[in-house]
Image (cartoon, rainbow, N blue to C red):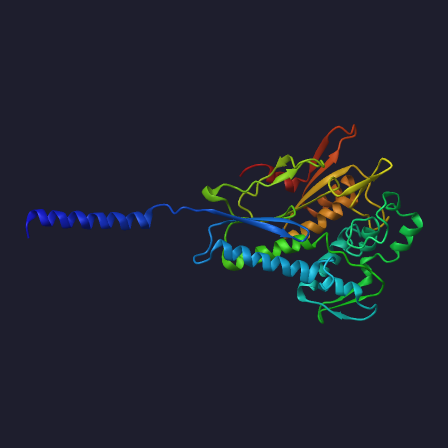
Length: 355
């Protein structure tokens, strides 16, 4: 073998080794895959960092669409006449009705939160939500002057409100209604849907994601380059969305939900009527709490607690949040009415800094 041929072969061998080394040791490009759509009367946006091998983002998006349609249209919706919830609302009184494991889970959590908050969260508030024009059943004419019910109407509807009218049998997976209640899961169902998507991603081995459905969040891991996810606290105004503040997930697996009275409302004779209905008074809340954000272990729980804090108001809500050691951020309207004031629990404070 000539020296020229030997050198040529050595050069080829060296090039092959360099190529193999590059493939083995060069940093792999990590991407954020993003998709979204419409579901549950709102929109959703999902970001996933690095997909499992063999899984296309289109397949993942289709699977999420099917999952959300199942939770919404087949189970938790009051707008879909044949959903499990709609059928439950039509079911006879004092008769055990078989329910799905998912419905049992949601109702069990709802009743737990109702007990914890002294009834500030109550899924049986549906008749009042409908009467005030914020639900799927608006029996009153669309004319604005007919939208505000009389005290007599409110008192009558309050007879149908009360989570204690729901009797769950966890062992047999049944629900028995002791009054003509109308169950409305809008204060917990979106959060539950977020949790189901997160469970699905966890099962696939996805280590980092950002799931948002109608403002309710589930966050896990980091963005590429070990950058933390940075959720925003929205400024509570009814104009185009504006950032009021930000906080940092810092690599934790967190669930976030917010609630406010600044988008879904109506005004009559100069009076502001929020979509947040107090189950005790039967009226929209009328305090200075503009919005609240809750960080919890699950988004369903955060969703329900955010609703409860909005009903309780800034003072009672803050006292409860501190006693429960929850991470909660309150945005109140200033006394002068020209701005906002922030207050947050000790546990939320750690999320306001990058760690």
